Length: 336
Ligand SMILES: NC(=O)c1ccc[n+]([C@@H]2O[C@H](COP(=O)([O-])OP(=O)(O)OC[C@H]3O[C@@H](n4cnc5c(N)ncnc54)[C@H](O)[C@@H]3O)[C@@H](O)[C@H]2O)c1
Image 1: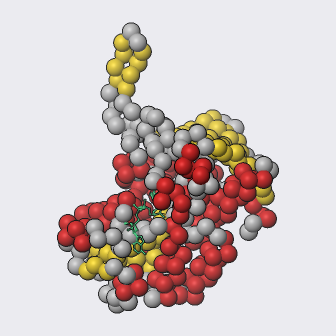
Image 2: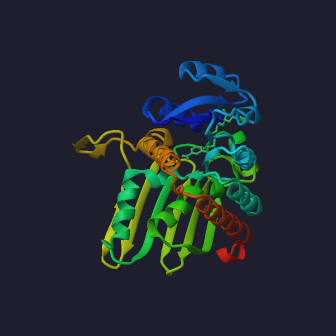
């Protein structure tokens, strides 16, 4: 079987996860090159026996042996990297979000279409087995017509300020996963967005023009509602829960804990904390999404999540930002 030759750009937190998965778990792909501006890239190449290291992304995509690129560079470089990769004829797996401007995203999608390459947007949570089960139950009518979806999405701690500054802020960096999840679980489009937000955790985040705590209500095309709460710091770990309430019942997914022991005593009932963060909680989903991307290339099928899914989530994130700034409900159709 043909192996797909991959080049990864940006081997920080996220790129390292994809690098490790690709090298250790896939037989239908090979990481031929990695590209990063950090000197640490050499040590990673040695650890994972990656043949080629490029300090410049532009040099990596000139490598005719590379079939596809995995883009895990900082958010403000994604659009540039997608455009350059597409023009070089490489298929693309890109971390969320594609960009922070809808105009740029539309341009990017046009260039990708003209280049005829595949673009997979890495909303990994669609590939989490728990959320997939919930989506199947909803789609299969197990709870009747969904009326209220509740998504709790709280990180164990905020990322460093330099990351925050180029991330697009809480709505476009963090809640964007939840906006995509709302569309995935319900199978419906968002029509209106109302958000509130504040700074409870780190004044530095406020000084950088961002928030660390938010609540959002999405109104979907069938009038059902999605209620999302986000915090950059939950003292007890990574809090990732979903509940779907419908006309015939309710379904959902609870937190994954470090283990499932229990301990009852006179002070109460105790157990393990939720898993630490995305690196452990969503490990299976990172494998599954990469598997899906590689299968798209091998079987010539359409990537899911697509570039259009990427665009919709950014539109919802921008609507949430406007809602917070202007204290009003924002119609998505005004942005698209
Ligand atoms: N899907 C998820 O669960 C998830 C989780 C975390 C981050 N992300 C996304 O992944 C992206 C990267 O986030 P991260 O947390 O890994 O950040 P990070 O800062 O840990 O890693 C970014 C890497 O890119 C490198 N880099 C910077 N400029 C570069 C350039 N010009 N060329 C090549 N490499 C360059 C940096 O040296 C660093 O190693 C972000 O867009 C973020 O939104 C997704």
